[in-house]
Image (cartoon, rainbow, N blue to C red; front, side, top):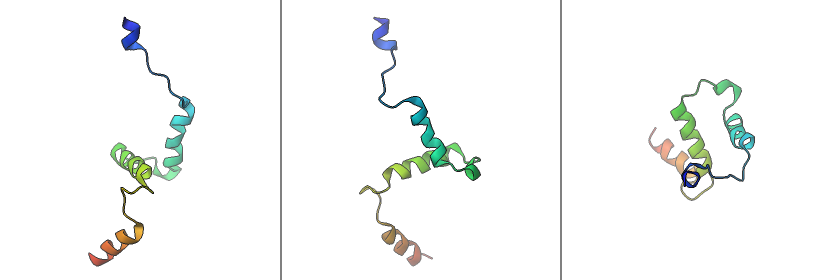
Length: 67
């Protein structure tokens, strides 16, 4: 019965590949990045190119109007 609750689920991605995305995300000059900033960067990166984010031209127009 304990095995039903304590066994970790298998993953189709090996651990080295899963953790290597952090190296690709943070460049050597960004190693002082706060954990919150890193989390936000990972989130925005995964949303990029989806309908959740507006096009960059729309964002640029909003920024230029408010400056």
